[in-house]
Image (cartoon, rainbow, N blue to C red):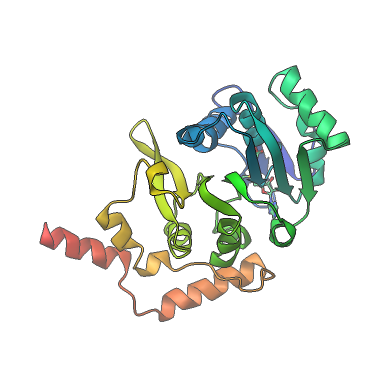
Length: 271
Ligand SMILES: C[S@@+](CC[C@H](N)C(=O)[O-])C[C@H]1O[C@@H](n2cnc3c(N)ncnc32)[C@H](O)[C@@H]1O
């Protein structure tokens, strides 16, 4: 079904599923290589290390039109609750009209009308997250790219996310940028990469190191001590994207840390 959304264009991705493009931000919501494929490979498949035969509590940060939640409903047999965080209510309230089977879409529709086990929180995820009391088995983090929407990638927001995890929880995101890896690492959690077809597909994190199949190697960890890994900061979770990016640029400029290119040159000389 074709829909219209304010400031959003709809396009077909390479696996035939629908993708969205935000004209204002000049940013895509879904990979052009396949929206459904992306949800499976970057968010669902990494969770197969968990025991999926127990009731799962899921947090879906940046629900959009719900690819990650809907794919979770397809693949995880026992879900006790999904909390979905999203600013754009137009997307949420129409999300049951997109892709997926009638069965999955009708679960979404029912829960939008009267939440049974899927709860939708409309608003800035930075505010919603302060109110969440649950601990989750799985957390999906699917914000727009940090250079466009840094509010969702600050070390402070990431700390909040990690505080909602248990020992055996899994956090996953498509994002593998150094500031995000560094922010995760600084919380004390173990981090790794998700790999698909020999390429890095995203990031996985857990307090349980046994759940991280592809850990970062020594050189990848070393890179997190360079300027390029300086984190986004938003101590009170209330700054604008522009303020966060400006502050980080200043911090990078004034930093005495090694630059990534210098570290790479040193490494080449050593090899
Ligand atoms: C990359 S898209 C996510 C796509 C989504 N997972 C899906 O399956 O359609 C990023 C989403 O973050 C939402 N968003 C942007 N800023 C937000 C904020 N501060 N809090 C919550 N959601 C936000 C956008 O409206 C957009 O839907």
